[in-house]
Length: 615
Image (cartoon, rainbow, N blue to C red; front, side, top):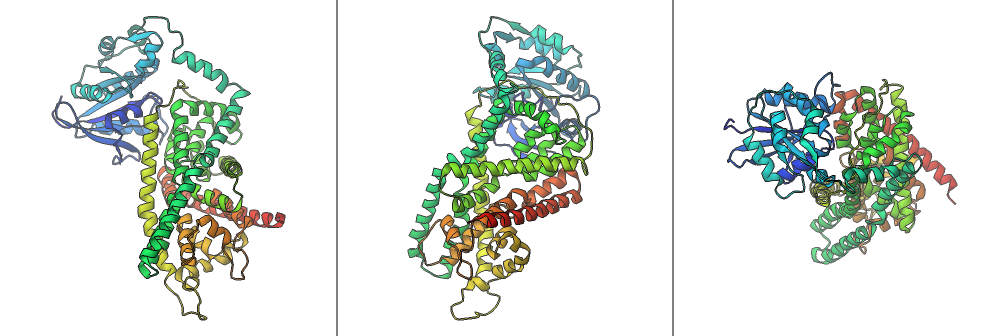
């Protein structure tokens, strides 16, 4: 093989364990890259092979096949184009297909297509789940498989301690081989031999689980219970930790204030930096709980079963069961969820899903939900969890209705039958899930320490910069500040929703990062309550006064703001993702306009209705 540094493309069918093996080989230190000429993000990692050569490892999207016509913009079409570029590129390319040893015939069908399309590229077959094959009382003849396919074969699994060493050695030894043609079914039958009778292997366990999970009556009940438990756990499990962090932040502010004094710098640190960043960071536990729950569901194989269960119901809204996965992913973050719509084959269904994903309540909305629910809807954890679950369900229901409208207007198209490969039910591996939670926590903390910190300081400056002299002796500077003037300029538009200038400033700031809504309120109330005993933002929000001395906020305003946040697409990154995937600025602007208009109408109705029903 050439001594030049190769680029290694990891390819494979969905649920083959490709990304898990890639993470095991790279030590989960890959970065997201973008290949010129192809709008697809892949994870890539530079490593050193046993021979000392450098290599770049690339984790491609999962794909079922390579031959025939592939839908434009789908994972399969993008992966095929990317491999074409790599094989014809200046660096030598190695193709590494990750195969599920328990479903070898399906994997070998893809292998045959890849070997025929790129015969000049060295090929490695990395067999995963070999431990499950042994549990089923079978063993695989790797040497015979290598002879039949003309590929370098390595058998391992992601949790094996020597997985990285074996895979890198196989890449190092891979060399071009003469093209071979083979029958996938015949080869699979020839190389997998049963050695004993397994009492209860992975397939038997999966069949037992599926009798309940896919039962026409029990299955939907289990699904509803799981989803309700996930959303409720965000509050029930994380609440004590959040309360402890909030109390710690207040103690830190109380300890620092006597040392820093009441000067300009002290206010910037305590009311600006700590008031903004500290207020946001206390909601980190909720986000971690949500990420862990979604990752566990995906790793267990349950999401595919949920897609199957929901397919018939989703058909009534113009979507298929496969749309459930990107919609659920949108509850973590809309950006990867929009990218995940590439698994949808029908262009109209994919477009409709992209356009409604912003209605799913992403994790960045959690701090706002937590703040408002805790401030205005009682101290009962069960009640708070119930309200939060209702917000998530409302976003999903509204998204489905919007999808039906989209499918009848801007996203017309025919419905395709559900084609779904059901993975085995597996016990989620704890280490990858915790690793993902750790990465999300780091990203959230970095965003709080950089973007939110900078925005909080900028807001503090705007709140301490006067637009006019004091109208009377003792008029607070914040009431005549640049930020207050800007927020009051928006009040004619937001007054029907019960919003004042403080909320307006927060809404504008949260367009860059939704968490900034909480940070903004923390800075504003930190300045307004300077000199008073430190108190949680929840208490400050509840005790805030309007100019006439009446409470500034109540349940009607809180309901309106919650409804507004459920619907409005206040995220520039989401709009960028919509534009990238649809290749249309008009559609990105359409998402912005329709979500804001709908949020305003629903928010105003919610405010007026709640106020009319309030005692």
